[in-house]
Amino acid sequence: MAERKRILTGVRPTGSLHLGHYAGALENWVRLQGEYECFFLIADYQVSDYADDISRVRDSVWEVALDWLAVGLDPENSSFVVESLVPEHAELTTWLSWFLPLGMLERNPTLKAEMEALERGDETHAGKSVPVAFYTYPVMQVANILMPRAHLVPVGEDQLPHIELTREVARRFNRDFKPVFPEPEALVGRVPRLVGTDGNAKMSKSRGNTIDLKEPRESVAKKVKGMYAGPPRGATEPGVAEENPIFLYLEAFDPDKAEVASLKETYEKSGLPNKVLKDRLDGVLNALLDPIRERRSYYETRMPLVRDALAAGSARGRAAAQETMGFVREALDINYLEKHRNAGPGQ
Ligand code: ATP
Ligand code: MG
Image (cartoon, rainbow, N blue to C red; front, side):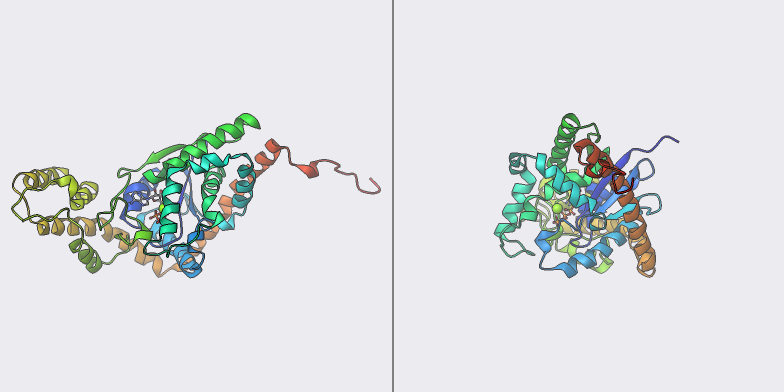
């Protein structure tokens, strides 16, 4: 069989995964895991904004692994890699940072927005100074993608600037040294950016506006009930569906597209109580989440299996990384000890 092309993608261990991860990324990972050789990364080098809360990071490594198993990623067929168990990521980041102009980072819109949020402070971060590691995390993300010489990177829309940067770095490296890296393609999920339950532009762990994949039924019901549903409006007053996140969620997760279209029509013509829409959404989300919850509870009672998945996946990730670093050293011509071989006394 021809070698499968490779996928590299990942998340930061900063909390449980949510519907945004699912529709923006995970769904594609599950779909593609048979076709590609996949490396799914838990990026624990990239949580400098949680440096004062390492216990959260530690717990989240397991949470992420459980969520991945729960959505149906298969750790035998794919590799679950803990970033810091493959220290070659740090090494490649250092080499690449030699060749990456500062201006390329300064222009990165995602980085800019995140730094502003960090300095301003949000729910989880009191306003604080930006650590150097935060400034350079896109370089490390480039190293993550290049490490297994990935062809495809399935991610949410906010990651596109990082992948553009990766392509540029790969091109430069291949041109200036040796052709080591494929130029990876981005693949954005069905829902490029899911809005938060508060109506904010992005559902995000750091904003606390999520519905998590492990959320119990009662909690889903409560969150859906409290969801922002567009500007205030009487139940029989026509509304604008695009302004109501409940519709965005129904469009994202309701398998009955015809029914959603018909609800939308009614809503825009003669109005509909938000309760009708919210009750429907509650049912739709639980139908999606029930099998995920079930698989999760299977693994929660068998944590050694989760540990094995992380250990075996990280070992495979490390083997791929060491192979790549061999090519990188050769391309950069830094195999110092290749010289003066067999030059010891008496030889
Ligand atoms: P944090 O706020 O800690 O950065 P996050 O929720 O943004 O957390 P990440 O670990 O940064 O999560 O992102 C993991 C992957 O999930 C990325 O590919 C990202 O684009 C995708 N993703 C995260 N949130 C959403 C969302 N609301 N809609 C679509 N994709 C998303
Ligand atoms: Mg993020």
